[in-house]
Image 1 (cartoon, rainbow, N blue to C red):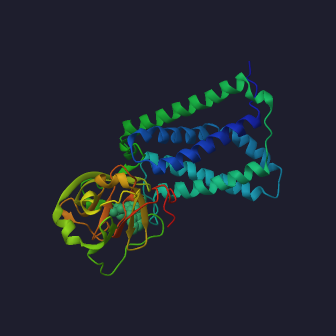
Image 2: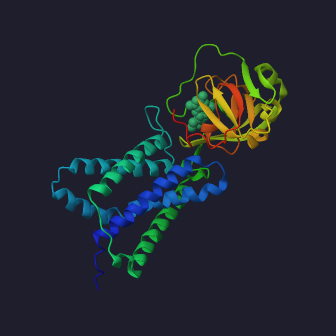
Image 3: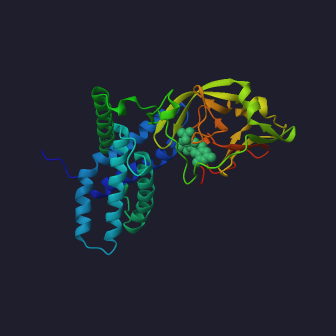
Length: 339
Ligand SMILES: Nc1nc2c(c(=O)[nH]1)N[C@H]1C(S)=C(S)[C@@H](COP(=O)(O)O)O[C@H]1N2
Ligand SMILES: [Mo]
């Protein structure tokens, strides 16, 4: 008996669901700082693997479509290329190739190609609309969908298993998917900025301006340095690596005093880079002057950087020049920095 071929419409619908899932979980994964978020990263990996599982049937559909010589063919080919780059870089990152050339990490290429793919998928859905039929919601479709998920799950498990057996770098990833680079060796830890920020050169004032319940004042870095509060915390960059270090400085609870109406703390860098944190986070936050046994290097934020345990790297503002408590709620900012 020969199984009936799966209608192209169903393959396309399944692909759309997987792409949407991958985009949503990928975005959420960037905000993840704590272990329960692992499920988001696993879902992301399985959605990506599902795209791979469906690539043979989709290959037929694509070949048929390209043969029709539509004028928008070029856009479809661009979408295909971006998707291939997105999937390849995703798997390469998982396998352990976290850094590529030209100063870009595999993860940065993955994200850039994914954003481009996402935009082109929206175009594709509008340009090649697909009308679902009532019969699509059949038991048979559900079984097929389940089959795709089971296959994706199995391939994902087998891949992770192969990484462990081969002891690739991919085997030792954190729950966020990041690779360990430079734990307890701050000198080996990459220096990185969110988007277009740069390490400031020239001398920086060894003082931080604090605006809180006690008014505005300037606190010398030397005073913060002598406090000697310590915290062991993991800097986990969305670029795809993490490092755990002993950070030293002063707990923000000692430095900042919130007014009753304050709901957030705005931390600003000399570069203008800024994050707004919930005021309840004060006791957990550290203003660091040192990492390991040495003073911070300029690249890692000297003279002062924020250490935000349980939060991704983009919260760890470097070259801090101002701490300001504010009545606005902490979510009153873009979820990810814009520059
Ligand atoms: N001023 C400033 N601070 C910043 C950034 C930035 O772009 N500008 N990038 C953040 C990001 S995305 C990360 S991962 C960490 C990297 O810290 P490191 O360079 O010490 O490894 O710094 C954070 N602090
Ligand atoms: Mo980062």
